[in-house]
Image (cartoon, rainbow, N blue to C red; front, side, top):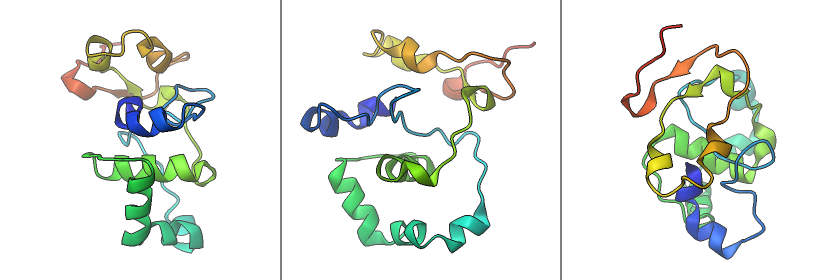
Length: 134
């Protein structure tokens, strides 16, 4: 849950949607499944500005972000600042199975993040969870 990662920003900005669950929140990204429009990314002046080390530093300071998941953290930070740069696939395209956060401090909100309606297209066995044998 990126809600955990953004705890300090959320405390300082209680009305924020950063870290809130879908559909109205900005829960962050899991890069288990990504579709990248590389041509659009290369041509986007805004996106290329966000790649500059000074801009990355600015975002990490603004959101008090201390990530450890590489591309996933970068896309999450950029998505908090510029959600218009992303087209979010519905959860059935990256159905995450990890329930670790449910048992480690977020049982009260876990189901809001974990809920996923529809026929699963791709299972993501994060946290070493087994993939169902449909």
